[in-house]
Length: 636
Ligand SMILES: Nc1nc2c(c(=O)[nH]1)N[C@H]1C(S)=C(S)[C@@H](COP(=O)(O)OP(=O)(O)OC[C@H]3O[C@@H](n4cnc5c(=O)[nH]c(N)nc54)[C@H](O)[C@@H]3O)O[C@H]1N2
Ligand SMILES: Nc1nc2c(c(=O)[nH]1)N[C@H]1C(S)=C(S)[C@@H](COP(=O)(O)OP(=O)(O)OC[C@H]3O[C@@H](n4cnc5c(=O)[nH]c(N)nc54)[C@H](O)[C@@H]3O)O[C@H]1N2
Ligand code: SF4
Ligand SMILES: [Mo]
Figure (cartoon, rainbow, N blue to C red):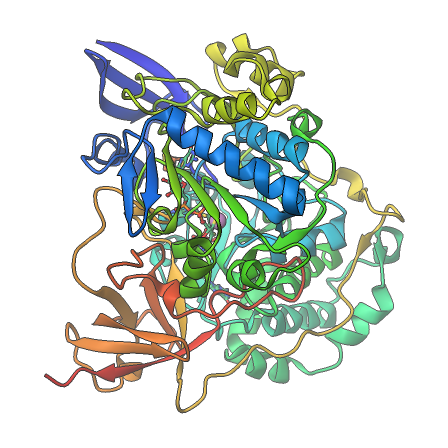
């Protein structure tokens, strides 16, 4: 029996330090490291259950190569030869741009960048642009602050007020919860702003339920009231640009009008303004809210609220969206010649199919399941199915892998060797192999090295995991990871301390233009589909296994179109329909229906089969939660 210390590499803010208990070469228990200041001895449900996935009989143990309709087992040599020959030919005939390397967040391991490096040197090839997860919010914070980073997580203990704005920590990042609880014990008041009154309400002194996307107006209303109460800082012009234009925007409507547009009562705006007026006040900006056609503008409105009240650049304050997880790493190690072309991630299906001069002839997919996780699933599937070569590197036969020409089996996080940064706190983590990979399974690093050798580029990606870690993180000796939690040297404890911003003027920018109003539902499609994070899955990775049967759709009883609680219904959008089981849930806003994200495409559980590809207002993110849908009773 041994215990191996490692880090969870999943796409989650928490980057937990894990203790893996190993018996006879088999992991038997996963434990959160009690010594780690954020992990505090516990893991989330989905990773507590990860061993079911680790040892699932469905895990791939051999490469698969397509013959006609079927994917057949092949040797590594045969599979890699096939990949190399086709990539070579396609590049010779059509240039590097005819190859598209798509990498997503199946693992946040920094060394996945070696695959990027290979393709940059092989081509350079086409890569993605924008970000399906956080494009809108990233663009907003870059525009306003010049960077996207947060105060230390434990700095929240200095806050007097905390607003969870569109964020569901019980599901999406549970290691925020003990910090929130402690902040409350120290007297902070907490508000929750979300169209879904989720479990976060149990920690909140105030809950405001705006209509979906109504947050821009809500923030404007709060700001207007605070200005009327004399709570805008007098020296605003010394650290902000566009002050007059912003003041005109906030003043362009009365509080009642802003409240109406936000879909809340004036009393809600007043209560939120009163709570937020307790300085220092922190806004924790969730990821869900910015996946909207006005998502970047919403985050800009929250940035502005923090700026005008003097809550940015101070302890206990901040408008925290993202912790700069890559800050400590040397990105140049993974770089190569610039990409000749980019594909907007949310438009994957459409743009791959439409690409010309050259067309996209070959696709390589690393740590992504785009058929399930990107909108317009059917088109994404078609785009993958119709290339001359589509290679999917994954541990399972996902909805994406099923469409591939070649599938290459990869290690899980318990077998991998890597480094991660967190986007919900400032600690870095080392991913160390706790168990050996099954025979026939390789790391992404070994796979790309095998490919590179065949293409005469072995030197570009040579080196073991350890040497890549040392190159990627020159400022921290790896031995430090054995001694306890390692804080990123790249992030100060207070972001933008002293109200100094890395923008062209050194000042922050205030939003000056209102976005288009959030869309309203129509009589024929009275609901918006919100496919949200679920406790049992990490995006499309379920643990234990994905439930059988139709998706469960949670809807306010008044919006259930007469479908009884527990009854079956059809959920229909302009793109198609799925069978669901309706659950009446009065905590869900009346304009919204909530289903889990990441459901299987083949089994009719994928919300993205119904969701059209739409961009956010900035940052080329996806407006995932604006698909108009309706529920219809199923008549047996
Ligand atoms: N269990 C689990 N945890 C996960 C994941 C998972 O799949 N499962 N995914 C991970 C990933 S990829 C990410 S990016 C992170 C964060 O990923 P998310 O789970 O997307 O993040 P949250 O910040 O909790 O945002 C979700 C909340 O935003 C709310 N929201 C949606 N629209 C609006 C709006 O217009 N206004 C307001 N105020 N709120 C709105 C939703 O109702 C919901 O409560 O979490 C990670 N954590
Ligand atoms: N409708 C709707 N769609 C959404 C969302 C939503 O809220 N609603 N959320 C969006 C968000 S926030 C995100 S981040 C994206 C996530 O989209 P993806 O990143 O595509 O999702 P995952 O399911 O986390 O991971 C993809 C695959 O990576 C594999 N994988 C895991 N570890 C490794 C590894 O080490 N190497 C390799 N090669 N593969 C590995 C997994 O087995 C999995 O099949 O989805 C987005 N899609
Ligand atoms: S998925 Fe997130 S909360 Fe769960 S163990 Fe991993 S880092 Fe921690
Ligand atoms: Mo995400």
